[in-house]
Length: 235
Image (cartoon, rainbow, N blue to C red):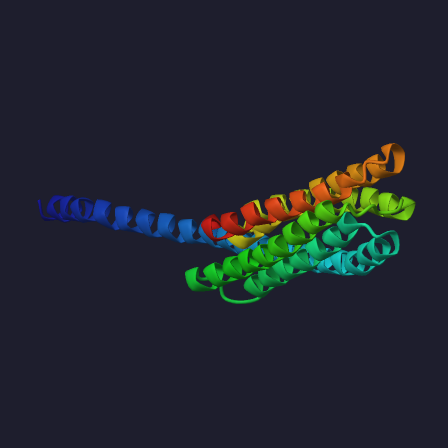
């Protein structure tokens, strides 16, 4: 009887110990599975941020070249549209620099809002310059000369900006950076505007539509206004 009582008592106490042991093993196993997942997420985030910074540096480098090339060609041909596109590149450099500044710091709401506000200011200033200059040239009936090199360079720019915009959009989806989302759209818009100015230069060269150059500059200014208002709402 004594032996049976001891066996029964040991069986009664064994399941809780077994349950506890299994729970501990599941907990330990869960930790082992979770840590690599978190490590992979951090690695993807870091790789995405590095890619984003490289894309912004590439955008700044191309647009810096673009400023000198398009403004120089615009002055040579008397084309306000080319000069306007060069000024738009200055705003794009400013926007890229703001995003780069945001990426290199600790992301928070205040920093994001400041970065987007800086982008908006750049586009409002650009819009004021382009619209006023475009209206002036229409009033005085300014007739620009042909610019075949400007046409070639704008075609190249449209392709480069489109590629950068697609890459930025994909990267922004990985890292969830609001200023980068907006700046990717601005880069895509830069590609579209390059095609618009390209069309204006072709119309002036082929059909003698001198007013197309000024209209293209005003168009750039109007689009810049919309982008300026859209930037602070991205967050």
